[in-house]
Length: 151
Ligand SMILES: [Zn+2]
Image (tube, rainbow, N blue to C red; front, side, top):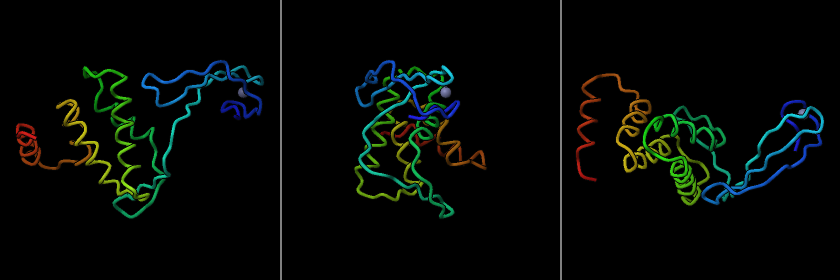
């Protein structure tokens, strides 16, 4: 593994440990060139996914980006790190298991909303308000009304 700081080819693994839910292995590495430390994560990937954006552009599915947007929605909410990890894993597995390699970004957004709805109402509204980009207050009110409905 090449060092991300100096490009040196020789980095050493200092230790390896499974993530909390056992779905990934984290390796702490040390660069013998510049002495910087960094971590790599190894996880199962069932298939390569491509996200098809609304304008037709295609970009490789980025797990970290998905994880970041979910973490932003859940910021300061009473949801444990381990559970967040499971939520992200669950969404990725769901997408991988769909059998499709091209996934419309809208489908991912809907899936995240469905999932957050079960987890935390505040996070759901945060994510949905960004995702759906509400322009009119009444749309948002109508949407909030949906929260009260049994699922
Ligand atoms: Zn280095």
